[in-house]
Structure formats: structure tokens, C-alpha cells
Length: 503
Image 1 (cartoon, rainbow, N blue to C red):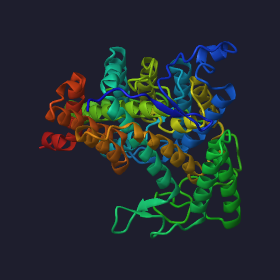
Image 2 (image 1 turned 135 degrees about the vertical axis):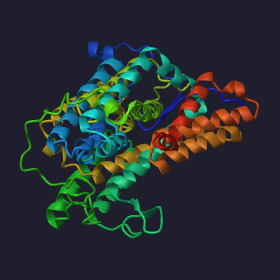
Image 3 (image 1 turned 45 degrees about the vertical axis):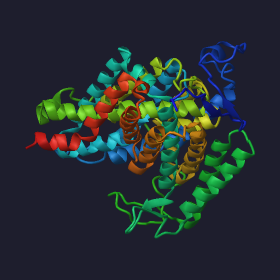
């Protein structure tokens, strides 16, 4: 059957399902005040309280990045230099706060931004093996500026529109599974196995107090959600955190890993140990802002090698955002009948500027976070929620010790619940044409199995173009889809290309 446009679906905070396009201007409802009018709060069937609460939920589900990013970027570069832990934590919060507020005020959608996971790991590897921190951050700035040019020329938006509805729905479903895997991994439910790819908990068993906190948090949050309690996700995080603090105070469990990153206690807390801090307020260290060398990487490793790094970072940034916007927009019922986000140009522009800003501030590329779906799942529908999230990130610069109180085991249940919300969209997929089923399946499967949104989108795009052509439906493939497919072929072949260049 042809790939016909499908209506978008989303889940309201009341638990009911809404179907059909909900454009940014929404139904004609008289706004209560200027703030309501600017953010279209009433027009999108939301309230000020719901937006602020949703922003709070989003913050708590992604606040871990303030602690995790310094850990990932804690290694030495090619000259043996390191980035100061405290400065990376403070600047991570600063950039996330500024760019998320900009997204809310300009983009006017409930999308939050912070340092991109995966990209920061790639940055750390390149710094350790090939160049200095300022040099790799300079390449991040270039990558962000290139994406900004693509946005200003309309290319990025055109690519977004060229992706067919079947793949956009599959992207949302795949991200649902991906979020679920992230939540389960953060809680320690899923871990690398001995003789298996993954295993359940510790040695195949759910053991340890942190896992109990996750399980109870998941059950409490799920019960509150199905009972349609307002703020169910936020209440779940708070209850789980309080329980974790009490358990840690009594049992003194400690962290799962030591300062060197090696596991010292398989039954310990995954990241933050939930203890009340001795000092709540601290002065942020912003000394690393502006420490980047725009073209230093080119002289260090050569023009071709540097361009390949920029290309790989750009592809990951570019399509992670496409997937995230599609999934979050679908969850909130914000997509139009073609599964596109109305008025997406400012959103894409802020996202691209965030990539450059992250590099310029020495904390790696910033991108739109899929955890934004947590706030949307709790009712957020407008940029006002992003403003709330951004303000909390700015406050986190001064209250970093307080942010560390919430353990990942307390936030992970929300990611699993939101994953369930996104996966429900699987009903919108076409299942009677294998040339549509296989690309959708590859998109869904590769996201969690390769721990990458970009890989899933790439597999779906390439297979969609080939299979629709194979069954004589070449007209269903937008010309830009062939360009995207070709770029993904290069992306997947980067390793052998680099090997050929180094011969």
C-alpha cells in the first residue's frame, strides 16, 4: 500500500488519547494573558501549572548530565591535559540552561537541550588519541556552524519533511524502546552479561537496594499515571528519591563504581549516591568557556581526517534531533497530518547553535534531549516548560551538590514509563507491506540494540529507499531521501574510509 500520511497521536495528562494534527496555533481559545498568548498555553490545551510541572520533570530526568558529562570528559588529551571536573559540571549546566531557555522563548516547544551523550564520548576518545581538548572542541564548533548554515538555507527542514510518515512513526517507536533501555540500564536492571550480550541485574538476579528503589518507583509512578494523578511522573521521582536517601542513610551502600570508573560494588548506586550534601551552594567555575581552537585540529591530524570527524559528528547531531523532535512532538500531539512539527525552523536553528555553543564552552556539542518526552508525558506542551527547565539548569550551576541527591535509580522509572507512551504509537504503522515493515523494523530495532538514534534512522532510510524502489514504488522516495541515504552509507563506512586514508 502507498505510504499515506497518518494522523498524529499523543497522550494528554488526563490519560486520554488525542488524535489528529495539533498545530502550533491550536484551537481558537481566548488566551488569559500576554504570557499565555505568547506561548499558546491555552491554545494547546495546557495550563501554566502543567507547563511548570512538566519543565520540572524534564529537568530531573536529565539533570544527571551535570554529573555525568564531567566524568566522560575527565580523561587526558594527547598532551596529558585534563578538564577541571567542577568547571565542566558548572558550564554543562550553564550552556544547557541558556540554550533550553532560548528554545522555549524562540522555538516555543517543550524541548530541552544539554550536552549530547554519545557525542561527548566520541569527543573524549578523539582528545585522548589524536588532539588536544581545545582542538576537538574547535571541530565541534565547526560542526555546529555547518548545521546552522544548513538550517538557514532550509536544507535541514527539507530533510525533516522528506522523511516519510512511516519512518517518522517508526522513529518515535524506536526511541520509546531506546528510552526504556536507557532507563533499565541506568537502574542496573540491564547490564553486560557473562557469556551473553546483556543480563538481568547482578548475575541474572534483581539484587540490591538501588534496584528495589527503581522497582518500587516504577510501580508507584505507573499506579499514579493510570489513576490519572496530576504530576504523576514528578511525584514518582520525589518519592523514589526520598526512599533512596533513607535507604542510603541506614545501609550505607555507596557507589557502584570507584573514582577510576571500575566497578567496586555491583549492588551500589549507579551514578549519584543519594546523600544530603554538606554544602548546598557553591560558586560556579566558568574558566573553560572560550577555550577552543577553531582550526587547530586540521593542522594536528590533517584536513581530510578532520573533515571526516566533523562529518561524523554532524550526521549524529543532525539526525538525533530529527528523531527526538519527531518522538516528543508525537507524544504531545504537536505534529501535523504529515508527521512534521509546525514552525520547526526556530527549533532547528536553536539546536544547531547549541552544538556550536557547547564546543565554544568546552563541554561538547549540545543537542535536543529525548528526555524532554518526560515533561511532555506529564502534560507540557509549550516553550514555557523549557523556560522552567532552563532556569533550573542555571540554578544548578550554584546548587550542583543538591542536584546530585537524585540517584539515577529514582529518575529511571520515568524514562521507562515515557518509553511505554511512545511505543503505543506502533499502532499507526502499516503492517501489510514488507517494503514498509522492514525499514520500520530496522529503525525500531537498531536504536536500542546499537544504543544510537542515528544508527536506527540510517538503517531505516537506506532500506526504505532501496525496498520501495524494488517494488516499483520509486515515486514514494523523495529525491532528498536518496541524498540522505548516500550520506548514511558514507557514515556507516567511515571506519574503512579512515583505514584507507591511513595506509
